[in-house]
Image (cartoon, rainbow, N blue to C red; front, side, top):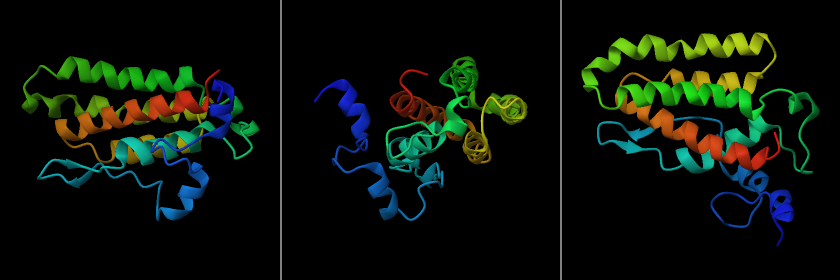
Length: 169
C-alpha cells in the first residue's frame, strides 16, 4: 500500500482496520475529554491519548469520509496556528517540570490565559469553535501539575494525529 493510499484509507490508530467513522458509532461520547479514570490512583483515561485524541484531531481537521477537507475548515485550524498553542503549553511544561510542584499554582493563571488567546484567534477566524471547545474542555480540568502533565501529553497525541489528517497544511 502506498503512502497516499494509506492516508486516504484513514485507518483508526488502534490498528483494527476499521474506519474511524464506523468506530465512532460504537463509542457513546467520543467528544468527551476526561483526563482521569481515578485521579487518586493516578489512572489516566486509557483512551485519552488514542481514541479521544484521534477523534478530536479528525473533527478539528475537517477531514471527511471522502478524504477531502471540509471547505469551511480549509483556511482555519492550520497546523501552524494550532502549533502556536501547543508550543505555549510546552513552554510552560519545560519551565515548570524541574520546579517544586507547590509552585504550580503560581503559574496556573498564566496557563489558563491560553483560553483568552484561543478566543482572540477565534475572533480573527484562524481557528474554529471545535478547537476552542477542545481547549476549553482541557483547561477546565487543570487544577494541579498532574492535570497539566496529562493535558500536555493529550495535546502531543492530538498534534501527531492532526499531522496525519492534514499532512500538507
